[in-house]
Image 1 (tube, helix red, strand yellow):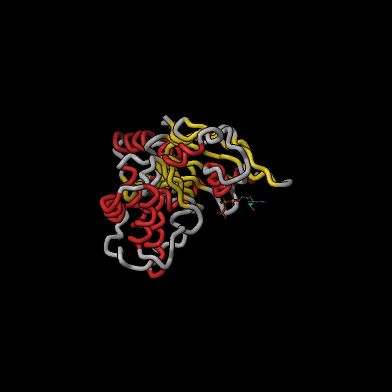
Image 2: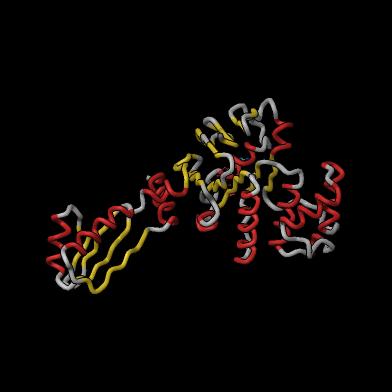
Length: 301
Ligand SMILES: Nc1ncnc2c1ncn2[C@@H]1O[C@H](COP(=O)(O)OP(=O)(O)OP(=O)(O)O)[C@@H](O)[C@H]1O
């Protein structure tokens, strides 16, 4: 089942078509990374999902509820963090949560639970204004999850955090995900999502250029294999005979480009079975960042 579904989401401001036919499908229980360059349309999508723009949301469904007809129910099952976290800077961390508790209930137990979850127990009596950036962001998450929503929608939650802050937020996302929350988060840096996301959606200039699991994104990746054999000419012959194409060769070494792991294994088998002398073999995989750049540069053409 999908937690968030949109059917051909469009958004226009004046002559500017900000979003064009965005059809999202965010599986329940996933950590869905929504990736795109600055200005691609991520925040606009998120604002639409949260019903914050004038568009009616008749093609947006959260847990099968229509945003147009069931926005109140949707608010109860959704927690969000957009732009900078919103809290009372002059109140302490726990006072901020006590304030929320007036609305949602749950009492001291829920406050303690949430503080533990976001790892702010030590800072509970600190004024929110005195927190580090990473802690402020975690307080923002604490506020977003206080009412125990099933889905979290976060706009660039890792923006501006140092490596330690990013590490802690990732840990928090994984922890929340293990507790059954579906997390939709945006970023303009693939590396930020790479380690956390189970699913990736890539948007560029308002168009969706990829959507699928992280493994599906990696499927098209090719590996460059650099081999330094005893007899390069013999290896070139063997590889060509067995259907591999040689990308480059010089006197000492050969470069072969292969697809999936299976193809790499097949190539190694050919070398082993033919008793080829190898001095060195190294493999370089195109990283996710490169795939991202390739996808969006195709959209530039
Ligand atoms: N109210 C508006 N009126 C006109 N154009 C807008 C409006 N809001 C956003 N845009 C334009 O729509 C495009 C997408 O903006 P959006 O904020 O959704 O991008 P983004 O992917 O979130 O980028 P960033 O990472 O920089 O926040 C941008 O070109 C932006 O200038």
